[in-house]
Image 1 (cartoon, helix red, strand yellow):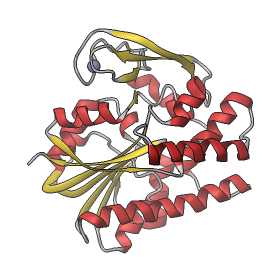
Image 2: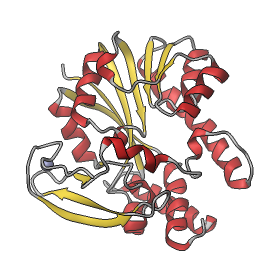
Image 3: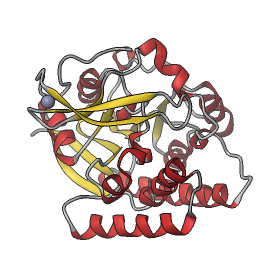
Length: 294
Ligand SMILES: [Zn+2]
């Protein structure tokens, strides 16, 4: 285990325990989330060392990395995934018709494949071997294994991290590297769970998007904006992810009761989306678009 002594966003040394919960997917071990008393950032502390982290990723539940369709839930998931890819691409195409795109944590490469179809020049990074091989084999994509952005060169018009930033061990280095790798007019698109969402406060320590211990950071709108501003970025757009609330509610129900409780998850997910639309809490997960400060 590794203790984080300084807040990754403001460098303060004063934290309080925010929540105790556990790894529901793999190890069933207990973990703790702390809150920085200075800037209100929430993060997993202590966390597994970089060496230990890998073993917490092995799970049957990690279905974003395979394409099996063995039940209704999987089928719904695959359909939603298709719609999500289209939505993601539509967002990218708002900024550029085509250009160079880097997807960090590209999984099986479905999103990059869509960009490829639209004549973008694409590059992916994916540490998981199973996912990476699928991306290369199925879609003929260029995908690197090495997650060390410092070794990467070139200028990208768009860099995406779809539910990836909460996993990276070197938070500040990663954001600094995003800036180095972006073209002057480039945009970086970051999707992360939202700690302040309705489903988060409803499920409390059972909330699946805490995903301990592999989610190292638990962002709010304020904390992610502060992080990127520290590195010379400004926020230009925010967008709620309306499907995530249902998916996260189902997994949270499963953590709490052992059952996905489909209809209840549908209700909680819908309420969460309504809070996202009509209040300042935001959605279950949010997409943030940042550019270099002008
Ligand atoms: Zn802080």
